[in-house]
Length: 449
Ligand code: ADP
Image (cartoon, rainbow, N blue to C red; front, side, top):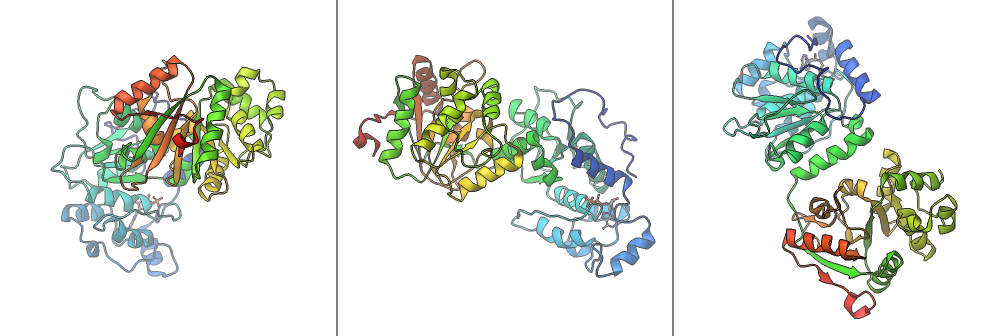
């Protein structure tokens, strides 16, 4: 039943390449368990025996009827040979099908019926009257996506109006047409391409979001960021409405630091994030400089320690480490979030910052999209976000500065400008959002307050 190559409509696993990161071992293992493992049971007989045992994770007292599912879906479930819900299904389905909808994290052993549970929720939430994607299911690998799609196809076999599409490597889309299928199952990179890069469907219209194998996903560096990005895109629109935006003219990089010092000295701010730009080379040097013991912790790196590792002065000045070192030596408690940290280290840095242990978080472009810390009151663009051509990257600017209406918090954004080029980027951002970015004189305490 798990032979996934039998359906000729399925994409060819060997064709195309969508740039997904290498398959993580845990994902492979998970798939293997699904394919080779017994699933709920080997035989009908053992299922019945196990379900009667109250200590078994498959034990169940409820019926599928009790869930008030659509008749066509119930028919699909019975056609798959399911008689009674498994424990995780019995526990999760009432929540998954509840109105108003609720969020849920569910965990149980492999083969206990999780996939069947969330697929049922996905199918039962589709509004066939609307011809656009409403359900997004992210899988860590091609194979798992196909596997899940097959379950959906079988469970929905009596619901011919529900349309499903795979967003995996090898699947091509007509970029001139919007996607009309109700359910999209795929890998994060491909779904980001379709939803964000090509705008083939509207992320805001997604009502069901499934993160399958969530533990595997967040442990996979590339997927981690992509999943957060997708999730963010589905939330309320970020806006600059409650944000006061300023720019500060600085003569040079050193002057930028003075600006930060002045800002910090004058306002009793809660927490701040400083974004600075590091290219790959600088990141590599930076990571080389940080000793193991300081990684992921409060940074005590001295400026001397950094330059000793081979930075030229000008390069040094453009690094997060340089800034962190300077601020630390001035008595600020500073955390650094850089691309070289492992997922665990990054989460640890963010946790410490969230809990207020550090008041300043210095971070790089690469990571800006993953950060979501609502209590931050001040955001400093040490370097303005630009794309590869050096033009204003308005989307990243909004992700750094913008807030969702739901939280309604106000904040301050400060952009440090050193030359005509960065001034132009700032003006372009201002024009794009049609929101004034005022000049701020950081030498004047009155101005800052
Ligand atoms: P998981 O996602 O937790 O690994 P699955 O949903 O893939 O588990 O279920 C494992 C196997 O058990 C699959 O073959 C599935 O068809 C079967 N299964 C799931 N729920 C039931 C049920 N209520 N009754 C009988 N078989 C089921």
